[in-house]
Image (tube, rainbow over all chains, first blue to last red; front, side, top):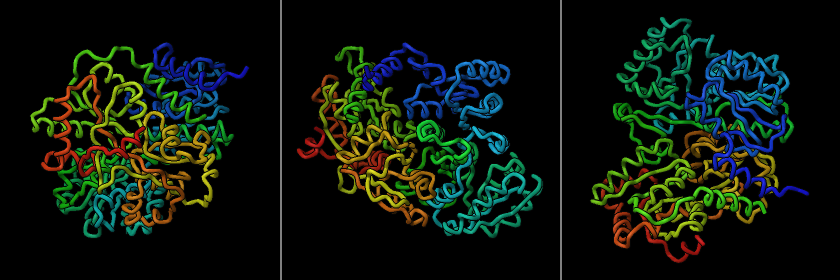
Length: 315
Length: 271
């Protein structure tokens, strides 16, 4: 007899909402049927957001594991997970991704929340794809132009070693947005102040990229002060910069990352695509943080239609 | 069949969560749940509305929610007098609670809005949406089902075959479709106009479907938890919201121009 789908779903609902089963673990699961969520550390709230969105978007059985930031504990967990023969692993964070990559060569892995994912060196891993943390430049520039429409020349100080690919992408899309990208290359953090002197009169906004060679506390404070003095909007990449005085940040929305991972899961499990054929994708959802005090100092008028786009403001 | 299952699931969920009896003490609160609003940080909305209500000399707590299930739990626990809820949740909640719609907000004279389906691809028929990836703002905990029921009503769209990616705001969905990261986006048409003035890539997308009109969120009373006097007071405060600077601030934050009493057509639409 065929088991009615609505009864099945209803039973799942009862069990997951009434506390009969552990969160993330749904019964009626045979070995080899589960999707595994592997978290680097669930005490870090940011890691839970993609996991929740992922589970919400999928009707597959899901089981969660937390390595608690501990690689040796994680390796033991990996051995346990291997026995269950999961269908797919959604790895959240650097350590979870590292262990999943190390432990599985034939199970599809979707990575997320990995800083600098290119360091993973996926060239030999045909079972891995994922979602990066790099908000695409077109999204960053479009949001900047929504807040500061007068911007047409965006300056960027970067090191080719860390940011060449990102800058190439930014160069490609900037002309389509009516933006001139004014680039200055540096090879050490000590060159940043001189780079600013060379760039400051040629730009009407400064874009800070997540470049470890450029960004130090001292350099950020210097650039933040200088841009404010020159009334130049400063586009950062995380909330902490905006809190410290940058005009705006455009960062990835972690729930959307979970939703994207669910979509990739369907590509793999339902559409039978190979992970290797699915390019590592960029996050499409963004969180916009605005410093209203800085906007005021820059003389920007912010209509309500624009403020609607902003997720959080600092006064 | 699909819609029946979706509806069944939602209603089942609500009844499953409710274990306490109605009645008891009055929470004197207004609960707010609108997943289509871009609210990551509800504290600003809570503070602004709270400030407005305080200035109108009414002792009423305002509590926005990001998650539907949390609001349901809190309805049971705190028994609020009023709710502001997405119109698509009204018929679901009305099956469980004795609700009466009091007011509906308007924007540019409109009591609702439409969404459009946009793409860069050559799609001639909605049947071709099968297997495609769609970016949209969330409609709630069951976005695909709610999307099918509200936005593709009476149309041959098999949502279960599609991949739905929920994003915080229309701009994200529009950029994703314009740069080919998804096949489709469901957005409010006005947001296309705002964005294409800034980013020409957005101008290349085309509209392939327009949804039926979706009503704005409704202010409703939970009849068992509010007195007639409270109802009249809240109605009066909301109807006058556009007349004070504090009220205008709240309306701006919610992106509305004011509130009106729903007419027969609106009430009929809700049924």
